[in-house]
Amino acid sequence: MKRVAILIATLMSLGFLTTIVIAWTLAIRTDVSGAPRLNPRTGLGMLGYYSPGDSVAWVFTSVQYSGVFELSAANRGHQQELTVDRMVDEGEVPAWSTMRRGDPTAATNAFYIEQGFGWPSLAMAQRYRYTRDASGSQQLDVNALHLPPDLRRFGPGEYVPIRLIWKGAAINSALFGWIYFCLLAFPGIVVRARRARRGRCWSCGYDLRATPRGKCPECGSAIGTSG
Ligand SMILES: [Zn+2]
Image (cartoon, rainbow, N blue to C red):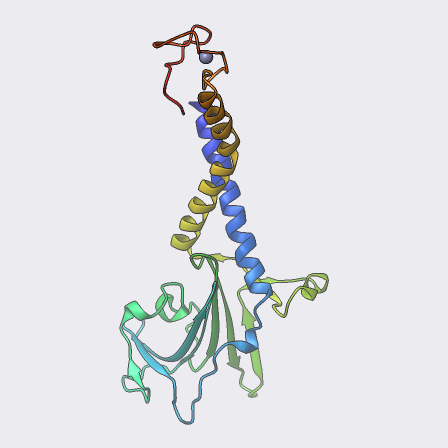
């Protein structure tokens, strides 16, 4: 029983590590300048969202491709009316986005680029926040791990996410843990199937051709079952 618990914990840990490695690899391979930009003049391609929690209106646009979800959003303060193509419901805004979670600094008229990474589910997220100070110069704040220069030769991404998207991370960890279990168990399944085919005990390999039925005289395993 204790061995089973240790095995499950080990497989889940390996699955979780794999989840992080995949999310970070996707982040390193993704250029933040490729994120869709808002067009504040025409409003083309823009969606609107009104966050009832903190009474903030947002305009945003998003794009999703394999393992990556990118969106750019602008905080329009407390306006109820936005010039957008369409107002969306809460369900169309990712739960990990600042639009849903709120910005703890309550910055207004800030511009955000948010990225979610992970495969098959999005598992980690990071956010770039651009604001202007009193003198009008742009400030950038990123809630992610800034990679040292040595690690920036593998792709255009300069940051890797440190925030987990819990649901996606749990799904990916369980999936990869299960794959590792199958890889570990597969050699044993092959050996047992081969023993059974050759008329030997699946468990210990004892020759059962002289033993018509019942239990293996060597180890006591039931004959004719496997696994
Ligand atoms: Zn046996």
